[in-house]
Image 1 (cartoon, rainbow, N blue to C red):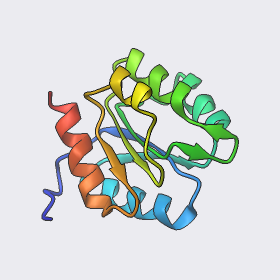
Image 2: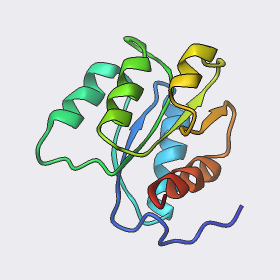
Image 3: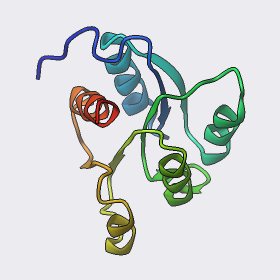
Image 4: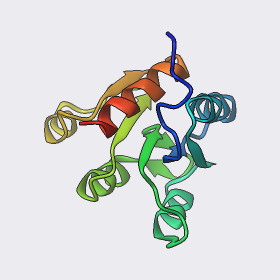
Length: 127
């Protein structure tokens, strides 16, 4: 998939992923698209620290659901409530009840090409 090098120009994207190689692949894809990576972080607690930092303006997020310190449903809901576009990349299917709460959030099953995640986030940001 071809990605314009300016699709995320200047956008700050939070990467929440506990598998280090996947996290860095996603971060590289964001940078290739002109974005600024916040993180990557591997836990809910670290993600919340970044979200609370007034110097860190998050424009979007790509995250895994299973992190070092628990499942990320609450973080996904928090991002959604704050109108922060997001994309989920997870190894396990989400519970149907959770999916039905957020039908507009794209969910990808690992393994997923990082460029696909970045493109999906761009689509979410331009809605």
